[in-house]
Length: 271
Image (cartoon, rainbow, N blue to C red; front, top):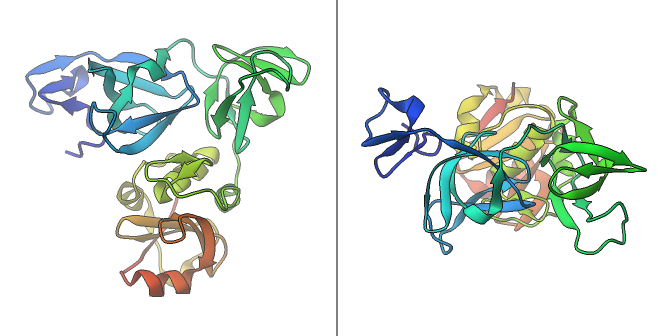
């Protein structure tokens, strides 16, 4: 049982797991959605606990129970189980109509780029458009967004490496998933999501999800894995990765990374 994707904690489990895993109490989940631009995901109900991931605006989060101001539950998009600040979650509502296709965009209080207090929406945030106003659309529960920064649900990018390259220079942040800061697997997940492909949250989960290929077969869009790390090939010889060595998303020759990391690499091709 991988606790990262199994909705059970302290003897309480999600009702569909009854008969599959042992628990003292099986409960139905309460559907919610992230109601802020980005919300920290933690491994404990404690504001001092480290961030292990992030929820983006509009992502569904199924709550199993609440504790000390935090909600324990599971992100529906990638199955990650964690604690999220209750204040960051809103009603589930109706499903999204669009996702943010730009690297990030702003939601204004009115259809005016000079409106105060815009909210930053990272790439792959999920929104429900309720009406159009000029080049803006009104997003349910938030405000007005430039329509050109959105794509209809089901419309995706095609170039995994091209999406990743847009994050070049973004700072390295453990658990991050946005251009404001992200980690190696967060970069892969964001690029895969933008291309309409499922990606687990952590690098070992990603490694196990895709087919192995030979070093000689590497091409643009393939993935290179080391223990605890992942990078994306941007051509036959170079990688892009969010990494703690350079503390940013950077491009470098694969040969240099192999020499520096000094651990066996594995190669995968995403489905």
